[in-house]
Length: 361
Image (cartoon, rainbow, N blue to C red; front, side):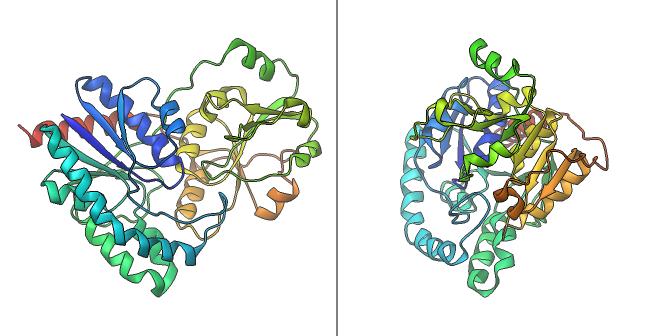
């Protein structure tokens, strides 16, 4: 069996949650061959897919939103990129269809959550499973006439799927297809090296994790000096070499071989943006969040509502974020309910396997 994943290239969150699900699929069906098709950074993919054998195909399946940083989007550039995308995607679909046919195997297409995966499944007459908490029709629908034609096209493509595995913090995904609700998607933290673990756990001050996803965010390092009673852990920036001696004494760079998830058990709070995978991982590790508001991205409202329900938190404006007023000295706001920490990755994997084996029986 060949599982071909059409993976959104918008940020790292889609890849992170699919890595969790694919690990569970491999436990259930170790003989299945898995292909991850995306232009997400290959170094990042290799890190999150460390323990399973996966073949990569470099394909851009969607545009998502054009962003200069983790918090803001560029609507005009997004519209231009969408028009360009539809000029070449059909040629790319033909190439991938020929490649899949050349494998001469039973196959399943999984999409998280590029609607163009529907054209690939239709061309090959293969079943299609969607996995997500929103569709790009939901996101573009808020942006007016500039995106109207895209919204209708994308919604039609989503309606061609055979099954939706609907994740938490979900928007209104009314595509007229069967759906299964699954829980929060997360992996387990990996072991840190003794040296790095000692460097972040031997301090008397509490550790604060800071992370803004694959887009990153350019924060002034001097802001960390405003909070000398805390230690901060920030992801290493790819291809940028910074000496620890050049940083504020309370700031540590997370080596690129580690995920944010891996240090969550050693932290007391997490400064971040609204993001599905970040929220799931932090909630699973009982890590309170200080969340900076995000502009022009409809998913954020649903994530923030979920945050209020499931996690101790504080919500801060972008002005406060960039001025260093992170409210770390303020009392956390309690959640409205107790989260269900059953790992949805397992249910998602079981649902995929059951669907495929029923389809091909």
